[in-house]
Length: 331
Image 1 (cartoon, rainbow, N blue to C red):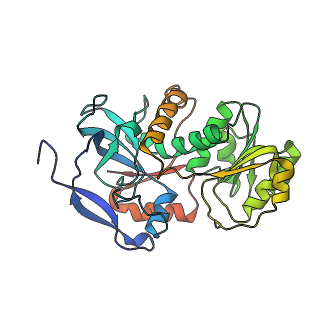
Image 2 (cartoon, rainbow, N blue to C red):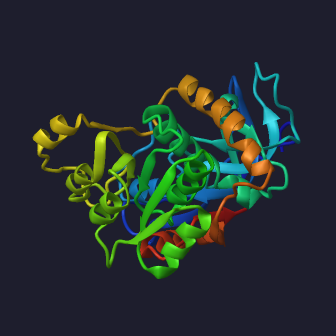
């Protein structure tokens, strides 16, 4: 031990690019917080599809970031680095990180840390940062979804989707969601969607246009042939936000439709944004979403939890597509 901190920690690393079986439990040196950072004793870590892409070699960490996967954690501050005045050891926090979450200790920039919402345990808090930062920065900051507008989110039963449905409906939007199967569709409606569309049986373009003049904002994680269908589903002056592409990133577009309806097509990744940008989003999330969590008007939807050593099983669960909400690893 040094300064009360262990020299080593347990972590899960990606031994090589491949399937879930490449995730291996290892012993690593325990990190130390740098300037403007805290060291978190991790109680739980969120599992995200971005971790799957990293495991496959398709989403490498930014330069200088830990190769250990994991983009969000919750726990207790174990130590603070130089220049840190707002946090102290013992504070309970959750944080968005650029990597390193699948471990018993993880460093985080102070600007990306938030106090654990009142009444939340580590598991429920750990799965908040990635989805809350993503939804807020894209749907409300980038696309400016407003009250009374029509919002369509694909993958409504996933981690991003369950957050987007709740927040958009609470802020007065008309929410539509696509999901696979009746169970997931019921979950979307229970969270606040006006209509859940079974992507295995129904045409979301037809349903959205029958129920409204079209979607003002669409949040898409699918890509591929969904992009053209999204354009058909959008209302005039609609905004399409692409944040993932499960069906591929290369698409064919009819730009005449974009021009005639004055559409905006945009996209973003969060991991490579500057510390300053992410700190700004953190403070906005804290002001706009944290009160809803504390009041019980919004919550984190937990599908399942796995011990850290069973991270491979957590990845299998995501890849089957059977989950509703988020998956967490417990340390």
